Length: 212
Image 1 (cartoon, one colour):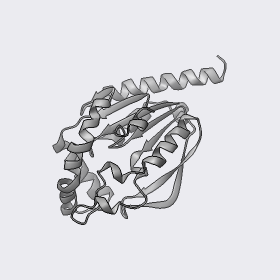
Image 2: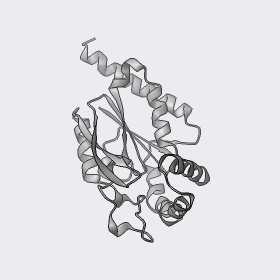
Image 3: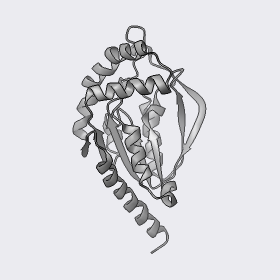
Image 4: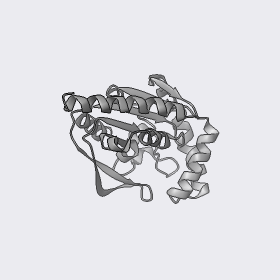
């Protein structure tokens, strides 16, 4: 199983980029590739020790359930199916619902700290980092959180200055050095290249199964 890690700051377009890759996989082969979101692996409830001015800090590495994420990635590598937690951004809690993922030939995993943990980083066959200017990331985050997550303008701005921005500089930005490919704001060419590799892997594995 080929595992692709996509990292980058909040609002850098990780999910959009991953979906561009998926859209370049023929529909007949879409069942061989899946998308995994690191946000699904936020801890069941926000850690109290990370609170900033009384608000949860979702941009610190300790906000994630690394043990479960590693377990699931290893299972996927073995060709097994996993049950991924569903995270509710309105309540900042996991729901009781689980989403089945796998088995498949290729997994795309996107998240701010995809490349942060050394053990998990070593599992990726291809590592990418989306390098997008801070003002663009902030504007994208602002639109997303208001439209999709029901948050207020004041809340988004306060969270950005209290946790998002400082955590990006302290923990996230340094992970760029581990990427095999740095992707800028124009992602179409990069999506073409990664999708070509995904299609090549899927086709090769399918021929092996058919003994062609």
